[in-house]
Amino acid sequence: PSVAVAASYRSWLSAGLTFQVVKGWAKFNQAVWGGMTSGTDPAFDAVAHVDVTSKATPTAVLGVTVRPTPRLALGVSYRPRWTFDATGTLTTDLPPSAMAIGAHQVGTSTGFVLREADVVRLGAKWTHNARLLVEGDVVYENWSPLSTIEIHPQNIHVVSDNFGTDRVLQNIIFPKDFESTFSLRAGGDYVLVPGRLTVRGGLLYERSAIPQSSTNVDFGNWDRYMVALGASVPVLWWLTVDVAYAHHFIPSRTVTNSTAVQVVSPCLTPGCTDPAPTVIGNGTYDASLDVFSLAIRVALDARRASP
Image 1 (cartoon, rainbow, N blue to C red):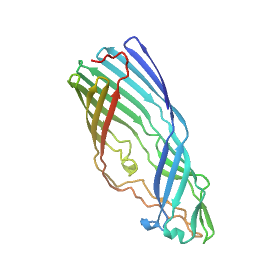
Image 2: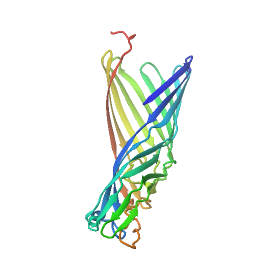
Image 3: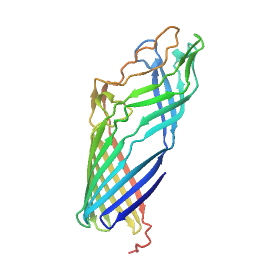
């Protein structure tokens, strides 16, 4: 939910402030290594299910637009960082090897924390004439607060009835070490057939905030290039249909220095120590993204007259 206030001074300056309350949900599965020694084998993997809901978190977006000439508009906006701080449940499907020693989980409550970025946007729009406008934007995102993603079990125990052992499940930390990044965007609209058809296109380059060593399958957001095409077709004087398509070209990444390692289940055999986690993030990563958009706009301005 958002509440916004805005004001303008003459024709050259305007500003707005949007207050927001963010509430979100996260639901995902995580493989957990349950072998007695280091290694990888799905037969020894438990599967943890995390289902959490965040607290209501306040944030805001501040924007200012300056129009030095009637054709040129310059804008800047800022959204501060905020923390996705959630609570919910962590449940586990155990492999046969764990069930054979009478292993089971006691308690399900967990916390979950990740940190969002500060975002600064700078933009310029040039209206060449009634048929053509072009825009350019630079977006800076400070992702350095997202150094880790953390699961905080709340008094969850892993117990073996056969051995009589009881281990507390410690915090699960996923190192991310995200970095500050930027993106460059350019696009334009052209009225190809006045009153009938407007076409548009855009380009994007975004540098990844994810260092090579932190590459993983959870976020496929490394360096990318995007090409987008779109059009608007007025169907009636009060009804317009917008369509768009964008393809993101994402180069492959080959990782040899990964910091992504297994989550390891506590060892329940008396006197044993937990096995060292195996590095699982090395390899070659490929990704692609296609976005299709369809929108219907209805003009509710009573001052607009029908043809």
